[in-house]
Length: 448
Image (tube, rainbow, N blue to C red; front, side, top):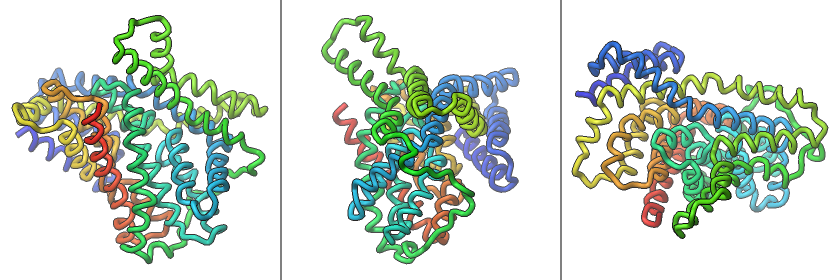
């Protein structure tokens, strides 16, 4: 019965968002109230559960999410992202252009959220495709694969950051394991899938695309942008801080080393929130002050970054409310009882639930957060690596992007594809990312 109520709730959510065109955040809150009442929650506990869900979710990620958006915008507005892309393209040459696009998109994708990275890199891809006289999609598939993988697996992106907080996973380990999983996944879903896509839908590689809807894009002369090395370092700085802290912490634990102030300091600096703050301050200098850009202009970039993610934060909070209702209403406990005494892997369960919700809801982030509400109660029954469960949830929430996902329509319109071609390229690509990601996570679970 609880799962039936959840299913009806998801159908109502789809009706509100897709049928009545209601705002996603408003729809999530309405459905959270309806599901809470249908589950028989006490009336005086409904509002408190929804408030707790919103507060608990945003309380963990608002700082990381906000600082990450500012960092990405500073790099983009300074021309750092363009420098990274163009330098790699020049160095790799025409023969290895796909690999240049993959690496550039991966680095840029760590610092920028999916939609922002897409809007920033697509004009560069269009320019390069014209110069080299190659298909736009030939370069677009590797770019989209890298951006999707970083979005699904790597903090400070909202999905993995939120899920890590909900599961109580070490975000540094999520990042470290995420990079290990992400690299082979990008290779399979990018350059290798590109060869297959050309055979499945060869006509799509003849399309010329259209980016007029993006408006006039800010472009730089290469000599006006920051240096390649400092641009890469700035984009990767939070990753470096968190990864170093995690590795040192793991070494200390395995060697049973005594705790010391130095280790405490390293853990403090490597904490996701601290690392993002330090990285933002570093970016203010490297992308701004050292290049004689006024601090007022830099702060304007930061303000615009935060205003652009306001609705996304509310949607994430709405997802947190729905998640808390599932937990407080007993749905999570019901799922835990169903799987009690079974050998079902929490990694596979988290992936499967996230995949079903992703196909149903469209939003990868909302699907991931809602999955936490169903999976958290059963995690106590298993001795499982929470970082891997986090990644499995992220992988599941990446699967089968289709008509209820904004990313589907962005890819379709920018690359000038038909519905069939978009399904055969982008939908298949996102499914490869999800399935291959799960495969590599399961392999990694045998080692860590």
